Image (cartoon, rainbow, N blue to C red; front, side):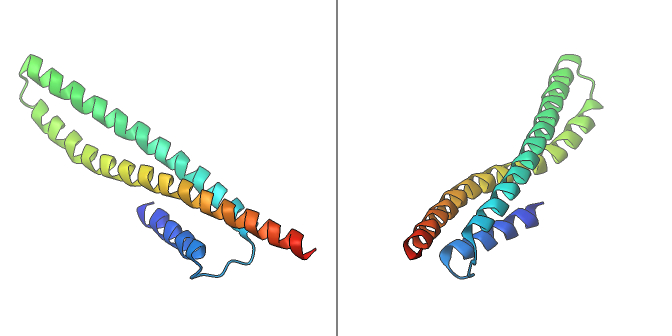
Length: 122
């Protein structure tokens, strides 16, 4: 997922900057909307997974503090090992989705410009 969203945002950045020619901005906008929806769905799923692991980690820590059942330290360690990568991944997904919203605005400007140019030539 990480590689896919990074590659996609780089491709869109190259289209917006003019490095990669775009024949039809409206088609690119439509594709971008679908990709954004898909990545936002993934972001929400990862948020729920991350929150679940965070709640389980905190609950296990509280249980350990109350009961002093030391084998729970292993569970706390395992939850932390999983929680840290989930936080990092969610952070990436959140930031890239925000970046994609900015890209959407830039593509929309290009679509309006393309429409104005088409109307002027007709």
